Structure formats: structure tokens, C-alpha cells
Amino acid sequence: MSETVPKKQPPLWLALTPCAVLLALIGANVYLFGDDSSAGPNQMALLFSGVFVALLGRFILKLRYRDIESRAIKSIVLAMEAVLILMIVGCLIGLWILSGIVPTMIYHGIRVLTPTVFLPVACIVCAIVSLAVGSSWSTMGTVGIALLGIGAALGFPAPLVAGAIISGAYFGDKMSPLSDTTNLAPGIAGSELFTHIRHMFYTTIPSFTLTLLLFTAVSLFYTPGEFSATSVSGILAGIENSFTVRWYLLLVPALVIVLAARGVPAIPALVAGALLGAAAALVFQPLQFVTEQGAAMPWSERYVLLVMTAYEGFSLDSGHEVVDALLSRGGLAGMYDTIALIMTAMLFGGAMEATGLMPRIARAILSRVRGAGSLIIATITTSALFNIFVAEQYLAIVLPGRMYRNAYKQYNMEPRNLSRALEDGGTLTSVLVPWNTCGAFAASVLGVSTFAYLPFCFFNLLSPVVAIVMAGMHIGIKTLPANPDATAE
Image 1 (cartoon, one colour):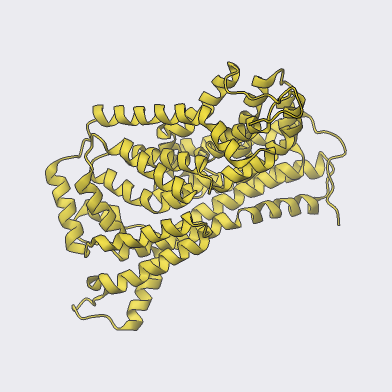
Image 2 (tube, one colour):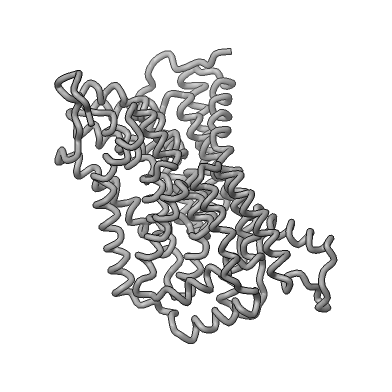
């Protein structure tokens, strides 16, 4: 059975009404609940807003309810891979802490890094790993967890460290030829992969350079309040007393990075990492598998401990408050709030698409385009809006790409301009939205609310701004050659 669509274009005020309702509810939740707004209140706001959109579609636009429901469910299905990755990462974090992998990364990181270089180095490390694996999610869920612990040990606030991790991870994700979004954007725009990557240098290199300068300045002039040689020594001793710290445990995350770099999909690579973490725990952490009487656990109890650590996360009671806070985390169950946030966000976005309200907003933006520069600005703005109101990074690239592709041809602009704008507006702003799949993932894995780390995601904030400024100044805009037989590049 075919799905119905609005018989006529809905008015702009009607398209903007659900957006206003959602933003009002989210704003009230943040004001009333603070950092806990994503632990239930925002899910309810998205659910209510989705139902509200469906009611508008049924009674104002006269659409069939079943068609709206079907499109909304299909939208939720699009996020199932993200949900599965989130669940596996939760298991992986718990098992990697139990096995001593994360404690070993934190231990050696604390010994090597100092507060004066930590933030830019953390950003660069995440950029390198993300370039190699092509995934900001894998980077945040592996080395990002360790860097967050190192930063806490050095006295840096978690939101500031999370900003450095996310900035580096998204630089690599944006520029890596292995990244799904880096391949998706030129595919939608009609550009070529490496042409697209080279064209992104115009906006990405200045943005990342400014990002590193900002993090360097913060590291040089910011004095971590809780940092002291004594406190660091206490953390190192606490880790040594609770875990067997061996350098070869780092081979497990190294293997996961190699698998991802060789093109193994995220889910099997992360499952392999979780299983290797469980095996490493059994082999290298015998102290974790003893009874209260000090005897070795029977194998049945060891299995129970591994399963419950993967599901509920790792809990440490070493008597050292900072170490316990650093290493008591992870578990599939801890991801439920985030999964609910993703599903309700996709419900709202699917309903907005099904009723034609989100395309109506995009058409209103396109109608104000008056030149090549303003078209690029419109693309970046629309992609960011799709991240907010459709709540899925891939849709924020695909839908504006399809909508604006012909407009770029009309303005005699090469497809690489469109693909770069989709990345600047779609890829980078996704992690700044709490109910977007990317923002929900980062907040859940790093344990820092989206609104807390948002001001410190310098690269994600600067790159769209730099792109808009350059578009307004007509810098880095490639036009189609006058001679049809001329080679573009």
C-alpha cells in the first residue's frame, strides 16, 4: 500500500509549530532538571512532540494515521545500527575495565602526559585514531574513555576533556576515507571521494588549527584545581593495588583499531574487542576473580561475573574515591536512557518527514537563496536543522543533499561544494544535539551531558562558522568549467 503525502504544501507557520513546541519543552527540561534532563524528561518531550506532529498530520493535513506511523517506524529502524553499537560499547567498556585495559591506558597516560600539553595532545591522539579507523564513535568509546580518566586525574573538568576528545574524533571522522559520512556526502552530491576530501581542506584545516591553538592556550593558562604530584601518585598507587598493569594489555585496543582500519564493520570489530577483553580479564586479572574468603572463584561464578559486568558495568570499591569514580562505569544497562532518547528522537523526525513539515522548512530556506555563497550557507544551515529536528546524522546529509543538488547545478557549482557543505553542517553539528544519535552516544559513553561539553567542542563549533564566513566571502567555491570537455581536476 502506498503512503499518502500532503495534497498541498503545508503553511510555514504550521511546519514551525512542532519545532517551537519541542524547543520549549527541551528548554523547560534543561531549566528544571539540569544535567538529568536526558535521563527521562527529554525522552518524554520528544515522544509528546512526535505525537503532536502525528495529530497535526491527521487532523490538519488530513493524512492517514497509518501512513504517518509507518514512516515514523521506518525512521526508528534507521537508528538500529546506532543502538546496537551503543549496546556493544557499553559491554566493551565494562569488560575493558575489568580486564585492566582501561586502567593500564590511564596509568601510562598519567605518567607520560602533563597538564601543560594534555588538551592539545588528547585532541591530536583522537584525530589520529579517528583518521585510522574512520569512526568518531569507535574513537570515543576506546581511547576517549582512557583520555577522560587521564584528564580527571590531572585535574581537568570532564566537559573540557570531552570537548578535546570529540573535536579530535570528528576531525578524523570528517577527513578519513574510511568514514561512512565521508563516503556518503560525495555519493549524495555526485562528487568523487578524494576530490571531496581535498576540497574540505579549505574549511577543515583552518578550523582544526584554531582548535589546537585554543586547547593549547587553555592548557598553558588554566591551572587544574585538583592537580598535584601527591594526588597523581595516589591515583597511580590505587590503580596498581586494584589491577595488574601490563603494557601488553594495550594490544587489545590496538587490534580493534587495526580491524577497523582494515575495513571491518564497527559491530564485529567491537564485539571482538569485548570478547578479547573478557579473555584478558580471565588471564591477567586473577585478583578480580576471588571470593570474599580469598579463594579463587569456580568457573561458573567467573562466567557470572563476566556477564554481569558486561550488562551492569564495572564497580570498583578500592577505598580510593577518585580511582573508584574513574573506573566504576560501563555496561549495557547504562545505555537504556540513551537508547530511549534515540528512538523517541527518530519518532519525532520520522513524523516531521511523513507530514511534509520538515521539507517545508527546507524549501522556505531555499527560497531565500540569491547566489552561490548563500546556497552554501543555506545547505549548512539546513543540515544543522535536520540534526536538531530529524535527530539523525545520516538524514542530515542525505535529505538536504537530495533537495539542493539541482540548485547547485543551476548556480553552475561543482558537486564538491555541496558535499563539503553537507559535512560542515551535517557531520559536525550532530554531536552538539543531545537527542541526536551522535550527541546521545557521546554523552552516554563519556559520561558528560551534551550541553556541558558543547562549549568546548571547538572544532565542531568553528568549522561550520568558518565555512559560512568563507562562503560569504566566496572563498573556496569551485564552479563548473565553461568548456564541457575541460577536466575539472
